[in-house]
Image 1: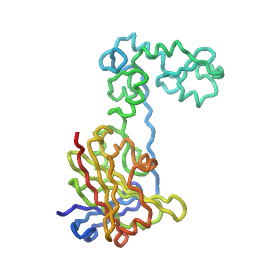
Image 2 (image 1 turned 45 degrees about the horizontal axis):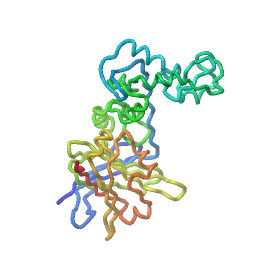
Image 3 (image 1 turned 180 degrees about the vertical axis):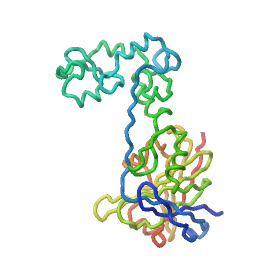
Image 4 (image 1 turned 90 degrees about the vertical axis):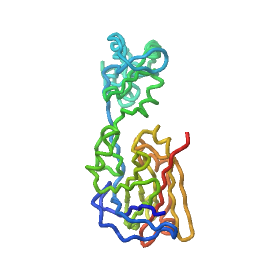
Length: 329
């Protein structure tokens, strides 16, 4: 069986124009791969700009302690508006603290303020508003992303968890690096990558070879490519960082262009194979909502140092066998 492969460096992070494809070379005796050029990026770091959503009222209604969707009455809208923070316009949720005059501000904004934004009075000592907390426990609040079409309303204890995985949450450009500030819907991610990051190679099939060239380039470098299989697109990233002077580490990971829930339906395997040695990593792909930086921070990826890389490299080129599979329900 022949495995498609992908190779190559580029100059700037996250992606740049790729060089012509190098000649084929075998990563293992059993499967000589075809070769295509993959972009490597230069110095830089991942930066995901925060999206601020201003909520003016509920996007839907529901009964009981759980969430719901549907039209709500003007009275319910007026009630939830009483909980709006005067600074960020998000909701003030328990524990609810007030100034000495009774004005509310959310806990996140309160930490940044020296006085009440409404009356300029002192915010200390902290005064708990137990009455408003009881009211908040009886009210369903709209999702933070109601302005981008989420119609759910939820109990305040359920809001953070839902908003962390809300399908209407804006997606940032998944390419490593800080140069691209694009944000948009999940459906628009692939279109953005195809038009704004044309140097990224896409290979078809669940079993491919990701060949990163010139792994000895100095400084921080990223190699990026796409893999398409099972009706989904996956982003493969190999990132080199200099942890401290003279000590470099490589991080390899697979991200799904999709939600966290969709990512749970897949598994991936990364394998370095050569010189009668083998190094394997298996895991569930992360959603691009999580990003590469979070995986690296938690070491939830294949991690190896320069010495290990050189054991498997061939003339400065490192081949990684990548296999995507579906998980049994």
